[in-house]
Amino acid sequence: MLADRFSHVRTWVFDLDNTLYPPRARIFDQIRERMTTWLMRELGLDRAAAGRLRQQYWAEYGTTLAGLMQVHGIDPAPYLREVHAVDLSALAPDPALDAAIGALPGRAIVHTNASRDYAERVLVARGLRGRFDAVYGVEETDFHPKPARRAFEAVLAADGLDPRFAAMFEDDPRNLAVPHELGMQTVHVAPGPVAPAPHVHHHTADLAGFLAPLGAGAAGQVPRDNPRKTRI
Image 1 (tube, helix red, strand yellow):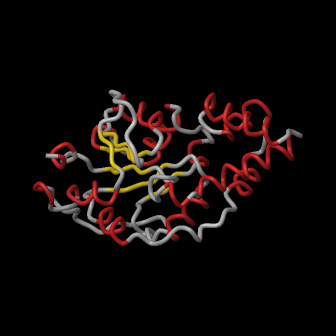
Image 2 (image 1 turned 135 degrees about the vertical axis):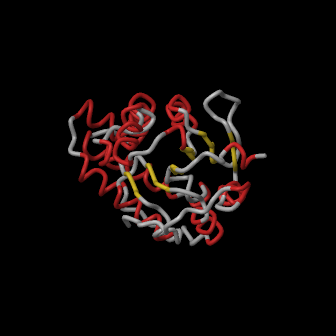
C-alpha cells in the first residue's frame, strides 16, 4: 500500500510554485514575465535575448537569480521584490489540501527557491496559513537554489530534520535528485508524469488526494502528540 511507503516519514517538505497550487493558475507565468522585463531593463536586452538568458541561467544555475548573482553580482533583494510582485487573485483556498496537510504526522515545511515573503502570500491565498511549521525561502539557503545540494543541506541544518524520515514534494523533477540521494521519499507533483527515473519515486496530479491516505491514523500511524507551532 502507498501508506506503507510513507509510514516512517515525520517531516514533509513541500515546494511552493506549481506544487501547492496547480499550474493552471499561471502564477509563475507572471513571475517569468517580470524576470524577462527586469533583464530587458537592467541588462539592455531585447525581449528574445532576455528570454534566452533567463532560460540559460535557469538551466545552468538552478534559477535565473543565481545566474544573475554569479555572473553579474546583482543585489538579490530588490530583484526578488520586483519579480514576486504578482497578482495572486487566481489562487483560491483549497480546504481539501489544507485538511490533508494538517492530518500528516510530524512536521510540514515549505522549501522554495522564491522569497519567503512571497511564499507566505501564496499560503494565505491558498488558505494554508498555519499549516506549516516553517517556511524556508531562498534567503534561508544563502541564495543557493534547488537543485544544488547546498540548498537542501541548508534547510536540513536549519530545520534539524533527518532526511531518512522525510519526503519531498516537487513539480520540477531535477529538484528531486538530491532528496533521493539523501534518503528521502520523493514525489513529483505535476499534471503528467515524466519518464521513469530512479530519483522520482512517485507521481501525482492531485496532491490533496495523494496525501489523504497518509494522514495521521492512516495505516496505523500515530497522530502527533502536540499541535504544530507555526512560524507564520
